[in-house]
Length: 300
Image 1 (tube, helix red, strand yellow):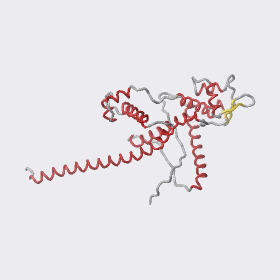
Image 2 (cartoon, helix red, strand yellow):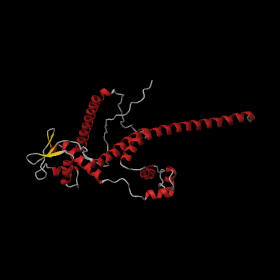
Image 3 (cartoon, rainbow, N blue to C red):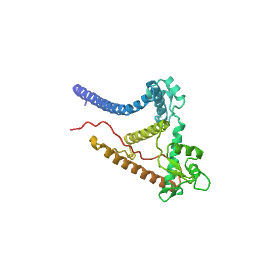
Image 4 (tube, rainbow, N blue to C red):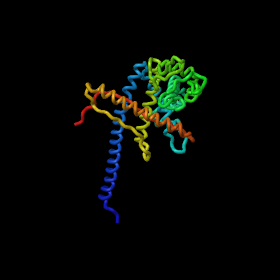
């Protein structure tokens, strides 16, 4: 039996009302997401822009780096399954013109820094000296001859920074005051971690800025979007602290942080050195830092 006209109109209008409700709900959710992302982005941009301005880097230069990054991420990570990524799709995803995409994909890589690589090599040498039983007496790092009878400083560098002249690493560790010469002419480890000492080391700090920030954001991205996979550890402990207590709390928190990182470092070193790699490698680790910000607004 055919439905009356009024029932047809009712069903049709109900259908459209439901569609409009769903669309409005999706738009509201999208608007809320964009607002939340905008808030997060501005919080990320603010300290980054401060660093850029302190180093004389203008918006125009930063915008070029951002365009390049948009093009590369879209090219490498947003392909359609089973299809080669096209410049047209990159343009659609990023909002860049196809001509601009073509230019960016053929532009030189803007992020190369040999100085940062030198920092990582020197840090690996310190790491091996502290953890490798070959270069320790019990829990204490050995004083090493530069070369000759092993264990020596040269063999340490060959093991942990292969391909770099030992003299180059020696000079770098002396420059940052990580080592000293003993009265017997041996090399003594003064501190186990590479510490910035002067303006040259700003390059290393920029390297840490990129690595640490990227690692945190990659972890958050994984936890938000990688459905069905186990989440990665991402914790934060914070409170509004009375100023008169801040120095004592800061000292204690930094003590906790150092111990956490030293224990994690020792565990990873022992685990990886006692188990030969059988295939693909991935970088993994734990990052700890102390922070101070203006107080958060109290919520009633």
